[in-house]
Amino acid sequence: MTSLSNDVLLESRGLTVRFGGLFALNELNIDVRNGEVLGLIGPNGSGKTTFLNVISGVYSASAGKISLGGIDITREKAHNISSYGLSRTFQRSRLCLSLSVFDNIALGAQRTLNNGLWHNVVQRKAFAAEARKIAEEARELLGVFNTALPDKLFDPAISLGMIDRRRVEICRALIGKPKLVLLDEPSAGMTHDETDQVVDEILGIRKSLGGLTIIIVEHEMGLIERVTDRCVVLNYGKKICEGKFRDVAADPVVREAYLGQA
Amino acid sequence: MGMIGQHLLNGLMQGTIYGLVAMGFTIFFGVMNVIKFSHGDVLTLGAFGGLVAVWAANALGLSVPLQFIVALCVAMALTAVVGAGISHFLIMPLRNAPPLNMLLMTMMVGTAIREAIRLFFPNGTNPQRFPELLPAGGFNIGPSFFRTDAIILIIAGAASIGAVYWIINHSKFGLAMRAVAEDTETARVMGINFGRIIPLTFALGSITAGFAGMIYALYYSEINYSMGLLLAVIGFTAAIVGGLGNIWGAIIGGYLFAGLQTFVVAAMPSMSDYKNVFAFVLIIVLITWRPTGLLAERGSERV
Image 1 (tube, rainbow over the protein chains, first blue to last red):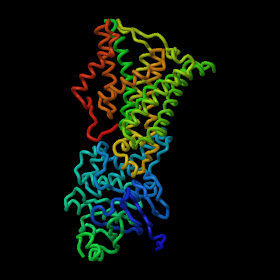
Image 2 (image 1 turned 120 degrees about the vertical axis):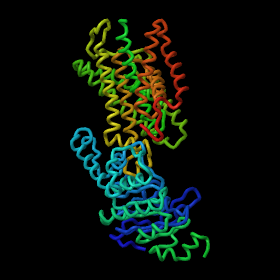
Image 3 (image 1 turned 180 degrees about the vertical axis):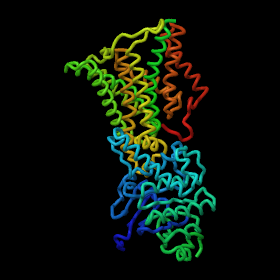
Image 4 (image 1 turned 30 degrees about the vertical axis):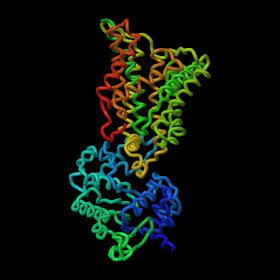
């Protein structure tokens, strides 16, 4: 299969991740097209989160190839991959709780910040201006989610409730103006209504940013149906089906994987 | 009564040194969960580096203030390089090894540094006189006499503690450091170069040791190859008492230990040789009472 060159943002070919004798991912070929929302679904342990971990550089691939925007990132370190425009959230909330909301969001802006020693130590005015700009952008982003959040910018993250923490995490993933955002179970730990709300907010932001590509891992099928353009179904680290959610959900192989029956 | 000023000054001086050393321990633990027992010997190395720099500057005919500046820069640069080197070449490769291996490794590095100074420094087994580079003399307030150099050193030490605190809390490097301390994986995914931040953090922590070594050398005018040993034990104790991983805790722990020592010396001058014994006994009581330290790491708070 050849990729549609410009159209494909992320491409994995023969991607394999082995933990000892276990194949977490087995010869996986996945294309993520520019501007789409791709749903990654499958039973527990099918390799969804492993896929996110390997493309974001947390795990390294045992075999195969991943490219992002035409750049081979298979052997790249996590911080370099982030600089190519990939950001993510985690299944369990991974905010740095002792840090302020602002500090957490500023972490996500690493790829756009000037980290030079001269800039940081001597050009304090430029440094302060940059910090102000980030704060301004963070306020704007937070405001999209929850109008009360911008006022909590300098509060410690630990003081926020679960849903606001998730929002801050999403802001952290978005502030660096990524090309590709990975959302790992955005509904985890939240009620149904809260999930709906956050997803609406994500879609709203996506519209306002224009052309943001998203890979979303989720168990909540209503959510997947609502937000995704296309789905890939994994089972035992292999792709078993691919297509629109409705077609995928009707596929007998997928039903068997989920329910254990034909 | 006339001694109160001296006791106060002495206590503040030692507290500053202990606080600086403890801060290093707490920074290393915060980011890497490692107790770096070579910390005290890095301090010694800084002081000896400073001494060599003074000799060299003197031979070049530099003025005394310049000698002081050169010595300080050399001590700090040397400890920064050694600290970063230890973390890059020894701690990073061992970061997934059992903590005891790491502990053992840092103890061996410390011993190697100490023995290298003893064996290779000219006449290294004996104490070395450290030239007086700061203005001599002092002034009286009431019956108490205050040494000018001590005042300068205390202010410089406190300023350096403040500077480190500022770097950690008000710079991008500090933010990266705190993020790595809290959650390494998230920090990496957010674009923080872990392999760069860790050595820089160790350089920062080691610079404080170099600075403490210079303060010690300038105040006592004498350094020896094993001076870092007791300072490391006291600094480590101070960090534990304050709550390992907490910067303020380390600083408070440092001044507290010095306060206990000074109290023993002031209250029972005839027992002053036992000041460490008394201080450590009181510390043991204290950590029995507050096992997690005075200011424990709050939940997941680090550095």
